[in-house]
Length: 311
Image (cartoon, rainbow, N blue to C red; front, side, top):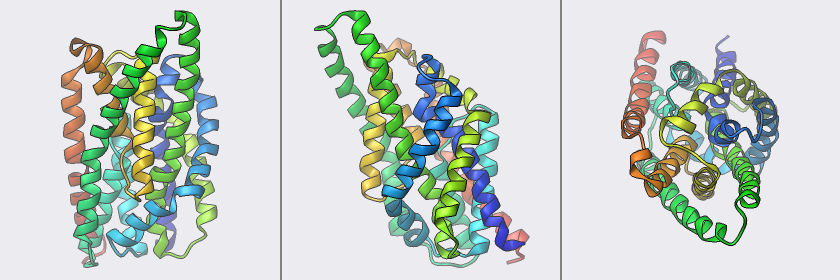
C-alpha cells in the first residue's frame, strides 16, 4: 500500500498544478476570450508532455537527486502534503507556487527521516525564486516599451488582432515550461523509486488537463483582474517576459515558479502603465504567500512524517 502512495500523491499534485497553473499559461487568454478553457486544457496536455520530455531532466535532477535523498516514504509524504496545500489554496482563490510547496515538503520530510539535505542546492533554489520575478518584470517592461513603439506604425484594430495571436503563443511557451519545470519538479521524487517515468509523465499530463478543467477559473480571475488591469499589450509583455524567464532558469535546472514570474511581469507592466492601476494590497498578499508557503509545507511535512511513521 505504501508503494502506491507516491503515485496517488503525484496524480493529486499534477491535478493541483493544472488547477493552479493553467491560469499562468492561458488565464489571460481565457479572460480576454482568445481561447476557451476546454481548448486550453487540450493544448496544455500536449505542450506539457513535450516540455517534460525535451528539457525536464535538468530540473528533475536538481530536485530529485541534488536537493535531498528520497525514498518511497519521503516521496509519498512530501507529495501528499504539497497536493493538499495547493488544492486548498486553489479553492480559496490564492495563487501559490507548487515548486515552493514541493521543495518545502521534500526538505521537511527528508530532515524528519534523517536524510542528507544539500543546503547549497537549497540556497541556489531560493536565490532563483527571488531573482525570477525580478527578471520577468524587467523583460516584461522591455517588451512593453518595444510593443508601444511598434504599434504606432500599424492600425489599432490590425495590431490588436496580431497581439492576440502573440498572446496565445506566449501562453503556449509558458505551458511548455510547465512540463519542463513544473511537472518535472513533481516527478523528481520518483527518481529514487525506479518506476516507469514515461507512464508517470503521461498520467501527470492527463491529471494536469483535468485539473485545468476543474478549478482554474478562480485563479484566472485573480491574475487577470486582481493585480492590475490587463489588455493585449500588457498581457503579452507579462506573458512572454515570464515565459522567457522560466525557460532561462530551466536551462540551469532551477525549479522556479511560473506563478510568481508571471505576477512579477504583470505587476511591472502595471506600474509602467499607471501605478494607480496596481492593487498593492493584492501584491502584499502574494508576497506573503511566497514567504509562508514553503515554510508551512516544510513544517507540515516534517511533523506529519514524525507522527505518521513514528520517527
